[in-house]
Image 1: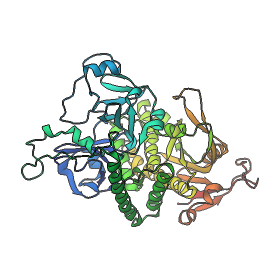
Image 2 (image 1 turned 90 degrees about the vertical axis):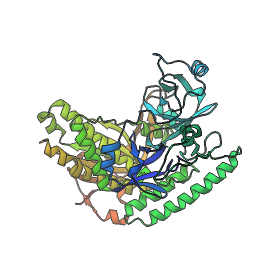
Image 3 (image 1 turned 180 degrees about the horizontal axis):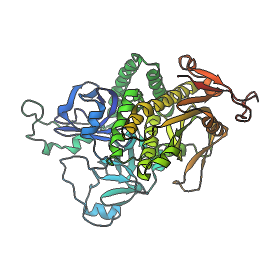
Image 4 (image 1 turned 30 degrees about the vertical axis):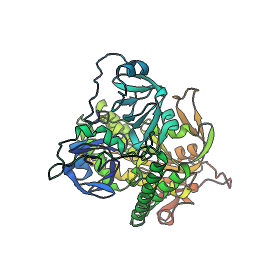
Length: 503
């Protein structure tokens, strides 16, 4: 077949093990959805090698600088699409009478108008959506509120994730393999006579599929099991204990929450400091020049918590408090200070997500994050500590060098971490109401963070006790005055011990 060779493959850069996944392939480029809401339209001429994954012959910074585009831009296709010229949206029935099967390639939004993804395929009763964070949603058309330039769903984002999120590589609702999505974007009638590669023309052959979805399911499962075996081999060769921890934990969480296979590459593998620093500096330069707008959405964390409302959940809680904002407020123009604070919260959010965590909320110049620990406390605690280390590294080596060149005050951060059971509570009765975390662990983490020195990490005894030995050895106990620290151990009743990471 002419296109589809790279579709749904993971994409790597020379200095990054994960850039994203190919969601659309044209004759001359691949469209890659990255972490968060990143999108890159990369020419095929930049592809260096192809195996299980696609390796781009550029560093991540170069890819972002040359080929990053707005995620909400229409995806390329040769299928003729009706351009929406009416001012107001209309209901689905009216729209389909005028444009039958006309939802393909449209942007999708939820009730509050937040972008949720693109329609990759339309069937008689469903739409398949590829969205941010590598999510895929198979949504019944009955959930469509109205249609215009975009498809508007009659739900908010947490409900969308909770009800309709499925594995991105699962067969389509029709029973066809996922690869058929790209075939339909570039159907046979539009591929005749189009050149590809170095030599000549190839005849397009449309892949035949059986009507029996069970056969497709079986083939898909076998292919994915082979991919999972290959991925496990890659993880076993990792030199960093942290990378191995991340890979094992991803497998554990998938096994515990879904029967879906492990993807070839997962966003959780983005843990090396060089990649994080490169991404941060790229965005920071553009933001200070007014060419980049930060968007720190919390939709993913609210979607996770929505599944656990009115229950107790084991979580590792992290507070990351920015140091130096008071000095900035007195020395910088308001617009510059706002940009820097936004940069801090956004970059810290990206790091948390790269380690499999979620950001609960932003409180002034601090962020509160959490890592689910119910399935494996050791892995969750190790990830949180490594995440905190990366935060300090990114501020020191990514953000501060740029601030220094602009003669702006440098930043630092103090981080506190603890683990325990927490109550998940939703304020209000409608699904869009904010969902929060309450508990003794939250209070302890807030207080120990306030006692932490700049660019230091302080953890509670419950975290320290179960850390991997190679990480635990780097911490030493810190003792505060009784006036400063009055929290007691929930098991012994004695003062709760705290530990600080040494340089």
